[in-house]
Length: 136
Image 1: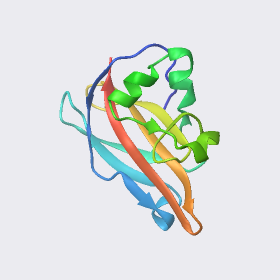
Image 2: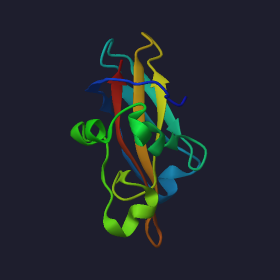
Image 3: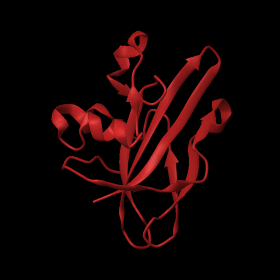
């Protein structure tokens, strides 16, 4: 799990086994798998609330890694509703949105995973993986 600081190109979206977790499914972490677009290997990812990921703002701030348009066109994030702007301009379903880089364990292709985590309503905490995308 690493941050990404250089410009990247999104190539394609990987197949993710499970992308939606709620309440007790998140404790102590959310674990799922994605299939590598290059070699077909199954890779495991584990997201620990408040420990995993980096703010998505790092990706689109000054178009350092990806532009807002690239994030929106690839359906990685959507524009945040006006009542939730404190989470940033771009989020996954109006919740705090994070990302991390990871590699395929077999062929070492590079991937970016984007997810949101937070309380959607009282008593309902959600962790949703927007997706895992291969990049160059």
